Image 1 (cartoon, rainbow, N blue to C red):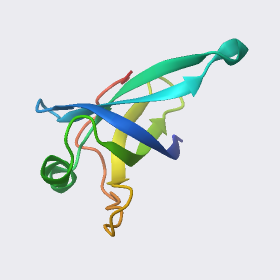
Image 2 (image 1 turned 180 degrees about the horizontal axis):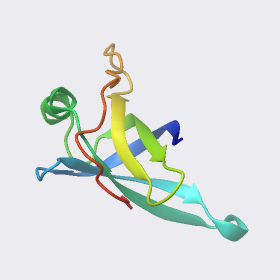
Image 3 (image 1 turned 120 degrees about the horizontal axis):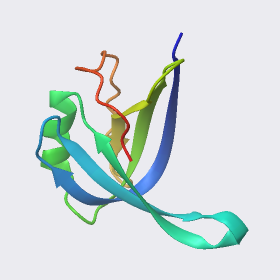
Image 4 (image 1 turned 135 degrees about the vertical axis):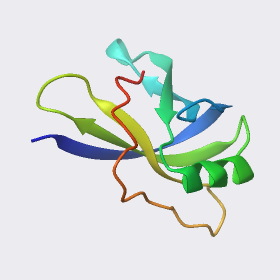
Length: 110
C-alpha cells in the first residue's frame, strides 16, 4: 500500500509552465548539511484544471505563496508529487484542496 504525505511551505514562484500536465517551478532557501544555506528548486505538477486556472489568474513569477505538495510514496518504484493547494499570504482566499486522483502516474519530479 502506498504512503501519502502532504507538506506545506512558503515558496517563491520561479515559473508557471504551460505544458502537459502543467507545472510550477518553486524555490526556497533551505539549511543544508553543515548549516549552509542553499537554494532548493522543485518542479511541481498541477493535475487539477481548476487549480491551474486559479494559479494562472492569481499568481505571477516572483510571487511568494504557500503551497501544499502531495507526495505518493509507492511500496516500489518512483514517488509522485503534485500541487494539492496554495494560498497567497495576506489575502482572504482559502486553500483549494484537491481530493481527486491524479490524471496519471507522472514519475519522479525534482
